[in-house]
Image (cartoon, rainbow, N blue to C red):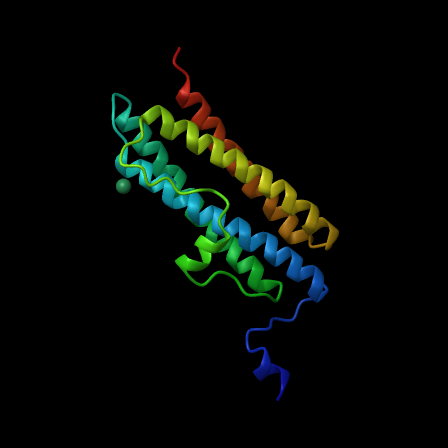
Length: 166
Ligand SMILES: [Fe+2]
């Protein structure tokens, strides 16, 4: 059987296959976390309550829009380096490390604190992925990880400032 049939989604890349596979595993886990964070941010946007409703509701919508934009960049980076990416909500569920929050009620303060913690966990995962990516000499992914890290740190900063009580 010709290899193009055996691997119909193979994309040629000069990064060695095993290195690219390691990078893809790291990126697919980060993609699952990013989708989980996107939906939690929307969940809290929808279920926000209390005296800071308008500020928090709008801030979380801005953050969700930014996070959703990152998902496409991650997935397409995996494809560019010759691998396949996530295909379903089930695929996200099997890989995500950021946990869902299905509670009936979460206070505004707890929502802001949990999202800050999740964004900082994402920063840590991005930092770990960068080591794998740099080992593979995948410079473009490395640079993109820097941008995604900066955005997650910015979200954590906004969430921290929003949590101040005085
Ligand atoms: Fe909305």
